[in-house]
Image 1 (tube, rainbow over the protein chains, first blue to last red):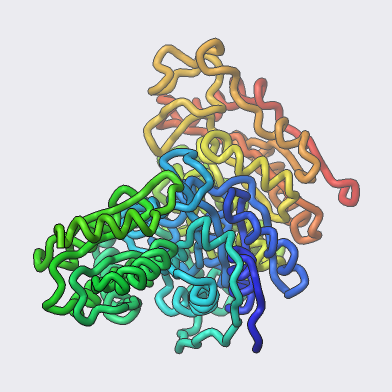
Image 2: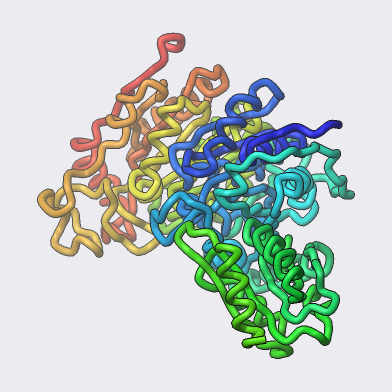
Length: 352
Length: 248
C-alpha cells in the first residue's frame, strides 16, 4: 500500500474504519471536527453507523450502549468535551467494556482556547471520572504512528475489555503528513459471551452493569480490575529512547512536544552538548522502565510539556531520586520554542 | 382447572426490593407480560435507570444494561443503533427522566429512536429519600420542599408526556395509571401498543405510568392509590396524546 497525504483528524477516521470501527457517536468541538465529519461521510458507505449526539454526555453513553451490545465503537472530542465524557468513561471502565476514545486536546481550563495543548495529561492518566480505574492511553507523535495505534487500539480494547484513549493535540489533528495504512495487529480474542444481544431463550440474561452495593463485592471487582491494569503495565508499555548514549541531560517529552525536542537535540549536538530523549508512547502505563536505560553520564532530567507540569510528576516517580528533575512548559495553546528549550537545558547544565 | 393467573416468564423468580405498596412491581410485571406475549423476550434488551428501579436488571428475564442517572435513552440509542432488529426499552423514573435526563429523552424522541420508554411517575425522588422531583405537585411536601412545592420557587410540575407529544419523532405517547384494576389493564394495553409500534419500526414510543410512593409520601398504600387518583390524575390527565396513523 502506498502512502497518502492526509490531514490528521481524517487519517484517524480512516484508520479507525480499517481497524474495525463500525459505530461512531460524537459531538462537534474544535479542533477535532474533521474526524466526525469524515465518519459521517464514510461510515454509511462502509457498512458503519455514524450518529451525531445531542451532547458529549449522550455520545459517550451511546458508546456505552453500543459496546455493551458488542459493537466496535469509537468517539472523539477535545478537552472540555472529554471532561463531559468522564462520567460515561468511568461507567464503561467499571462495566469492563471495550471502546476507543480520541482526545484532540486544546488549551484549558474551562472553555480555554482551541490551540494545541497537553494540559489533559492528568485527565487522561489519573482517571477524570470517579473510582479506581485506568485507561490505556496512547500519545503518538506522528500521523503514521497515530494511524498505526488507532488501527491497533480496537484489538487492544477488546483484548482487555477496557477503554483505550488516544491523545493527540490540535497540532496533530490539523497537520498533514503522508501515512500508510497497514494491517492492524490481531490479538487472540475471547468470544464476547457477555454482550447484551438478546438471550434468544438460549442462555441466562446478560447484565452490563457497574453498580455493586455490597462493598465487599465492589472491592473484589476493583481488585479484579487492578489485576487487569497490572497486566497492561507489564505488557503494553510503549516508548522511544533517542540519543541516550553519553547524554549529559535527558529530556522526557511526548507527542508534538517530543518532535520539537528532537530538533533541539540535533541543534545542541552541533554545539557539542549531548542530550537524550525519552518519549512515552503510552502515557498510561507510564514507561518507568525507559528510565533504566539512562546512562551514568546523565546529570539531570528535564520534562518538557505543553502544560504547567503534569507529566513531570510521573518523571519524578520514574527517576525515583536518581537524578534531579527539572521542568519547562508552555500552556494555554502556546508551543515551546526550540530556543527556549535550549536555554533551559544550558541553564540546567550550568554555565558550561 | 384452568389457570387464570400465573407468574410471567418475563420476570425472573426473585423477590424485589420495592417498599410495601409500591406499584413498581405491578409495572414490572406488565412489561414482562407484554414482552412474553409478543414473543420477544429473547430479543429484548432493557436499560435500567438510577433511582428506585436501579435494580430492574435483576428482575427482567432478558438482557439488561444499567445506565448512569438520566442517560438510559442515550444508552438505548447506542444499543438500538448497533442492533436495529432487537427490542430495546428503557425503564425510568421521574427524577431520572424528567430532571437529570431531560435532554437525553427529548433528543431520543426527537431523532425518532425506535425504542420504547416506560416512564414511571410518582411525583417524588424515592430512592434518595423523598426529595422534590420536577413532577412533584404544587403544595406537595418533599424533604427538599418541606413547606410544599411553591410555583414561584420551583415552577409548575413538568408535564413530560404533553411536552414529548409536541415532538414529531415521538409517534406514541400515552399516560396511564395503575391505581386500580381497570387502569392496570389499560396500562398493559398501552405498553403492548408501544412495543408493537417499535416492532413496526414507526418511531419512538413512551408510556407514562402514574405510580405511588407510600414510603416517601408518608401515607398508607391504600391511601396512596386514592391520593394518586385525587391529586395526580387531575394535573396529569390520563389518555393517549399521540398515536401513529398506521396504527389508529
